[in-house]
Image (cartoon, rainbow, N blue to C red; front, side, top):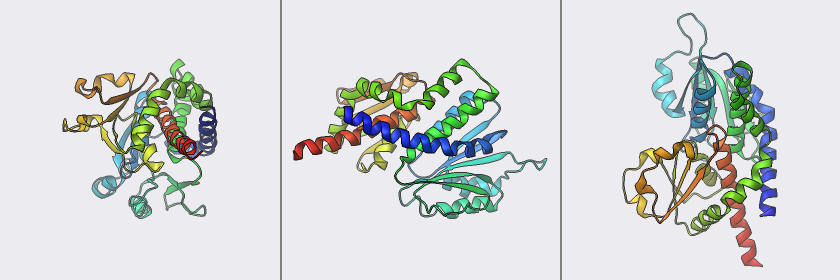
Length: 309
């Protein structure tokens, strides 16, 4: 596990340093806003869900909504102005690009259209041309391909929200969370040690292509990270979208934090289920879930190396 811990700590350090370089861009746009629309594309939804939760939890006076990018551009933006009756801009956009096709093909076109009808905001995306200019009113930040995008999305956004809250509405909780986000590398060893057995179980099921993930808003980052890491055969269901008991007959991993325990149906915890429950504050928990899912890739790589030797 020592090598795995070191590898993950390096990934976190790289993502954290990049997030620290860009979060002020988000903060400048978010500060003083009444309404924020957080837009994501396709299956990549955890960053939007996480941002809305954090804003609603610790930023007073800000109304935030998470909507699919295409849905917003097609059905909402053309019929609603970003400017209120007093000619003051109120609504600001935070857009998270999905790095996988087909969602990334038309993103620039859609975002430019939102700018054309008067919306301002910022878009974070992955692997675009480093010389890409802003899309009119939308500020574009391109994240290099060698940096974990999901970690950057979550760390930069949560750090932004915590910094604003720490200035405008300081509290012991906010101060503690600011400290946690600033020192993520220190928790790698303890969190992996605590969940090592379940992570190895999940890794084994993934290698057999025999696992379905049932997640909450907070824990979805775990499954999304696996998809970004190349495990495209996994199936992911939102815990509120279960519609058939047939799903429960498969090998499932149920992921949630302790505060979400009441969301989990009793029938979901069966002999086939792996429950990965974090006893952590909801705001940084998506980051911790992504850290845990990074360990899966490292474990499987290690297993392949051991088999070859």
